[in-house]
Amino acid sequence: MALDIDPARWHPDTIRGRRVFLRRHRSDQFPAILRWYRDPEVARLTRFQVGPVSDDEVRRYFQLRLLSPDAFAYAIHLAEGDRLIGTTTLSALDPDNGSVLFHITIGEHDCWGHGYGTEATELMVAHAFDALTLHRVGLSVFEFNTRAVRAYEKVGFRVEGRSREAVWRDGSYWDEIHMGILESDWRRLHPRGVPGGRTARGAAGGPDDGADTGRDGDRDTAGGQPLRYGRR
Image (cartoon, helix red, strand yellow):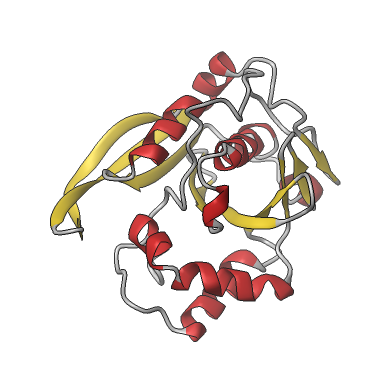
């Protein structure tokens, strides 16, 4: 499929929701990113290897994946108070087949379980389908991260398959679950768009069903997408 590449529409400075907004990363946010990737619980939920990650590795990830002007990477901020709480990205863009992979990390523990990650996921999926005009968004998540699986299902992702016993964690082997959502799924589930969703220096910010993203059960997590340093 042919994609209409409009830098202002593809890479808006800000994507706003009701309780969170997404903004391009700044270099002064590196200490927060470093702290999150040193966090053992964040590592347990998001990384295949839970051993120490060097500052240089995290810095390379930050500079290449989060600060690059061509990256689909956004810092997640609370709408009230502008607090930085996480990061979300799209990677592995396949323009020929209209697909992309989704990643999210909520690094601040006191922000888990409040629906912030769910709303950020909705904003990024809406951006993928509205601004990037893609056909499919995929992700992977560890089987034991049940809160993330439930949150993704509420956004509209479906389980499409699994890599059996792909990760050793907490004394057991667990599957890596592969999930995806199609544009047609999104339009059917979210016909009115994301509540309050809009972009600065870009197109309107995408679909959602108008449901309360802060409702009980919107249990976002430290990060649903396993991060493989140097492999994506």
